[in-house]
Image (cartoon, rainbow, N blue to C red; front, side):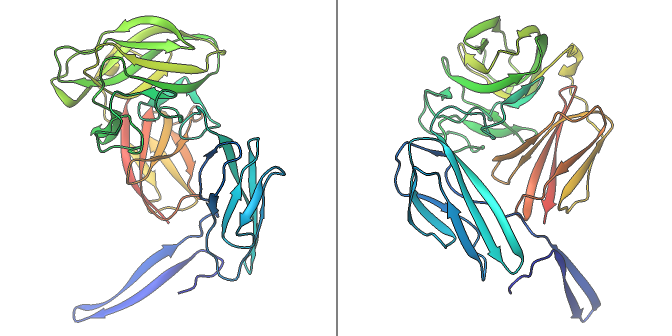
Length: 356
């Protein structure tokens, strides 16, 4: 089947011995994207970018002046050699549905915020431990094992990850001396509290150290034994100074022996947050396209969209001072996703949603 230019609905009328009924399947139109590496080296050769293979389409690629196209101009796949500066690759796709212009930003290898290199984690805000920076071993993290020992997100990296805190990703198998770094953006000079989700079955664990811009702002944080590697509790740390000049946070393990999940930074987090309440939460429509609405009996702080493998695809928030939030989802491929909803009191819930 060859699809047209607009979203529509497929109908199937089924006749059986028990009667007749109609099947309805909505089909959306996804935004065009360019697939390929985000990071390159100066003068790197044989770089491949691909665009959707669309019937009857023309493809006009543009690269920076010091880059050279080696193969694929006019096609949906492009091979090229990069130049000596970061830059943008542009593509104009023309077909019977019209003309679309899309871009792909190329950055030199280095340390960047994850999952969006241009969007550091906001403080106040919520950071999942598995959303450590791009950059790799010795740059964005240090892990004593070369391979991911778990079955969580970012399996291509050396940090050990898994899903065990009510299906939420966490970093596990943490050993003494291991560390993770997170690019941050602090909106005002303030003392913030931290709510850290941790689990441990060890008698010896931690302490956990938090360094901001290379400076230890608070002494080592003692961590409890929770009786199981999958039994998480929330440890509250009060009055950590943050400044608008802060750009990098490092989490450093003393003796290790613990798992680390979400880290919430906000003012005046009560100690009672250790008992995480269950919230009323509805996400609609489901299935959805374009956008979804999120309604709760408590204020939504942040929404993280992850695919079936646990890969973080989008981080949205903080939202306005409301218990209702809207999340654009028009750029996602049809399929099943997880919406990880975090509230302003450090509670959290995960919802499955189908996008089309």
